Image 1: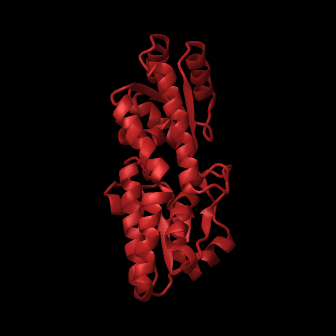
Image 2: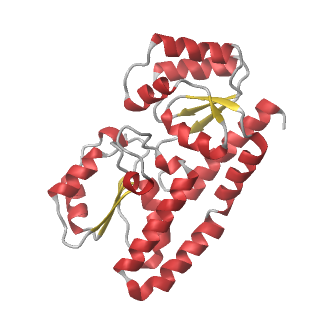
Length: 267
């Protein structure tokens, strides 16, 4: 059981024919922050031998489900604990390339521990996933970092921060604004004024926004950026389209960011 489909997609591909993965958040229109679990979700958790939750306050409902349905001998992976990000930190770890690779290592290790007889199979799945399946994803990250490191960008929320760090881009949007948007609270007038100035004075070269969390404030910033000729790229919170694998989803987004950076810098 994976609380969210971005981790579920990775777990499914690493497990191949030896696992059956159910992702609870599997609809692009569902907000993982305030999801209300169903009786079917509780049954899924109760029967799961292995559970993957994001943690860091992102999916507190999943912790409650796990506590209410204790399974005997169940292995649990909490991504926040694995990568050392405490509650209050940025929960969007699937946008950190380094953390994605840590999760891949841990899931494979957990599979091998649960099913030692098939350890060689899981090692092979991991090698294939990292070297072939994620080849395009890894190359785009390396290429963007090599070509555009240090380029200043703006963003609609904190989901973009781990990716910007992974790509070596410089995030200029105030962190207080990014956090407010991610948490669904109102940003301050001061932050909004700062962002307006960054767009008007073209201090940012590219604006990246989460199209699944597009508030009136964000829509206004997207409109402003476009009016100033600043290229806009989009990301989403969960797999889009719903049936996509982690690698297709991320590669499409990275290509969009790369194209925006190329347009903005002429290189």
